[in-house]
Amino acid sequence: MNNILFIAPPAAGKGTFSELIKEKYGYVHISTGDLLREEVKSGTDLGKEISDIMSSGKLVSDDLIKRMLEKKLKTLDKNTPFIMDGYPRTLKQVKDYEEILEKLGLNIGKAIYLKIDKETGLKRVLGRLTCPKCKRGYNKLTGYNMPKVEWICDDCKIELESRVDDTEEAYNIRYDTYMKETKPIIEYFKSKNNLIEIDSTLDADSTMKEIEKWLV
Image 1 (tube, rainbow, N blue to C red):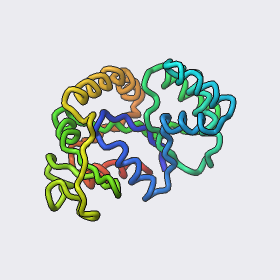
Image 2 (image 1 turned 60 degrees about the horizontal axis):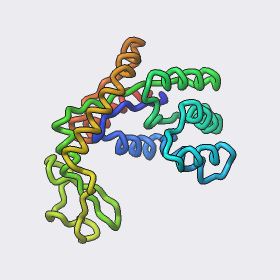
Image 3 (image 1 turned 180 degrees about the vertical axis):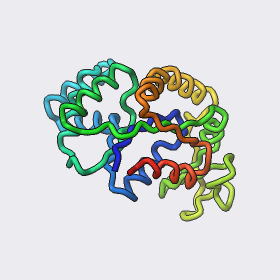
Image 4 (image 1 turned 90 degrees about the vertical axis):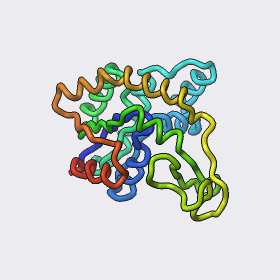
């Protein structure tokens, strides 16, 4: 199985597909955000260092993230594939990531770019609904994954909720910022013939089938 590095704008479905691949194929899902929280919670020297930085409102440096990620990857069985989520975000981090993998004898695998236009992403965001009890997700605007009864969870029969930050203004900012920051990364992997572009505007089943073609 190929390791995966997901490059995905907001609402492209990265979280959904990461979970599906993890459940179906046994991949390890590595999120740098989760790693930061776990490291802080563990109380290690590195965790305390990260906690002090985050408490002061500063950004965690590339060097610290590199150390934390290397520590995590060292714990993996080399025969177990993994999904890298939320990293790298800059060309400097790409170089750091490649250095870690080379040092540990791991393969970068496939860089998969889940393409989604801003309009489709906006529909997904503005239409998102979640059950406060079972956390099942729905969408009222995309035409699929809609609740059988408007605003009611199919399973729990209680009212669904929308996120307060799911606004058009907030989404446009997140989307534009992401595309600007990751364009150099997309071009980098494209230049190395290691960028797989997948249309993520399709329904989840169709997109998943396209992703599965590159897992082996």
